[in-house]
Amino acid sequence: MTLLERMDRLVYATRIDRVIFMKAPPRSFRWTPLFVLAALIAGYALMAKTTGLPDRGFLIGFLLFYGALVTAPFLRILGPIAPRPLDERELIVKARAYAISGAVLASFAMFGCFYMASAGVPWLWYPNATLDWLNLGFGFQAGGMLLPTWIASWLQPRLDQDE
Image 1 (cartoon, rainbow, N blue to C red):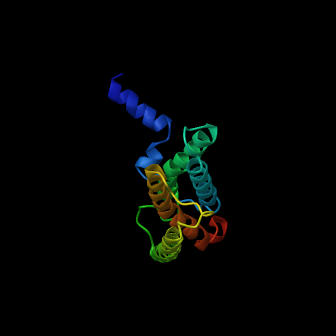
Image 2 (spheres, rainbow, N blue to C red):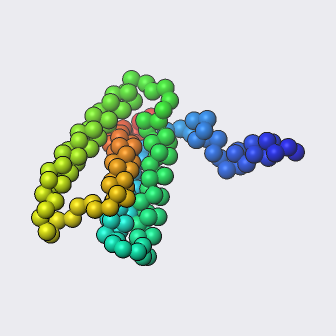
Image 3 (cartoon, rainbow, N blue to C red):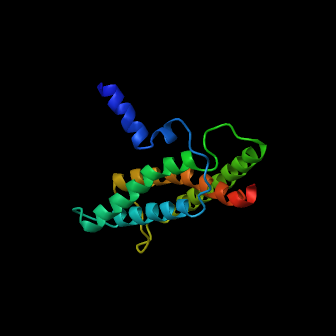
């Protein structure tokens, strides 16, 4: 057996072929994106509060944040608005989900701009290090992937009611 045949068998044994070839049927993730968003926020908070040398809290935050960041595209691909041919109802749900999530993300960005303008207030936190700003950008990117999936999952009827 050649190396390519072994690699091919590994792909089918691990079921990665369902993701790569879009064989998996779309799923309605109603609560999973919320848990991933919570892990993203908690991980960012644990990493951002660390000053000086990284400690155990920083490492836990790092694992939570970047684990959620890696999970977000998979939820988007396997979710109800997966990149595949959609029918009319699914296109309407996709458009509404992206519109609502865009409004939510824009609202958070506007709130962040006003919050950062008040950075001189002593009891308010703001990102100091370059890594905090970089992670904040990654967090918005993951939120842009998770929010449409979460909203579309709630806009779709349940699979047992969809029949």
